[in-house]
Length: 192
Image (tube, rainbow, N blue to C red; front, top):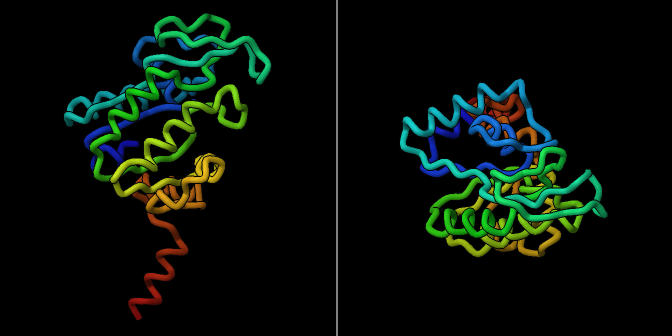
């Protein structure tokens, strides 16, 4: 994410990754998955973004479940009211609207990763809303990652996305500003 801060003016964090950033921001995320070993990194990224004047957006509400199960009891709550033993399974409707508004005037959108457990219908609305926001934008849209690609194909809007990367790990490596050995080899051949 540090590398991305050199190239963006807005940053949206959703999905499981948002839990670590929310915890860093002082929110209780209940029983949601959090990468505690990356909490300091998340805090540093947020601090760096603030120093650079980059707007940073996190979920403001969430769809939570009593357990990781499509038949679990679910509810929509503001992010500051996540029940202690419940887990965040998707972004909520207010967050979907917020993220859509943030993307409205974007010139370029780079997206990796679903915003919820979209494989379960009860928790797919946030990702589907984001798919439609990106597809309906006039921005150059670059989407990568196997799970994100699946969401695009499920909604049938792939023809309205500028570029879809099917190499999830390679896509992330490039976003990190690193090189790919195969691409380096091809470039070396072209330079002969």
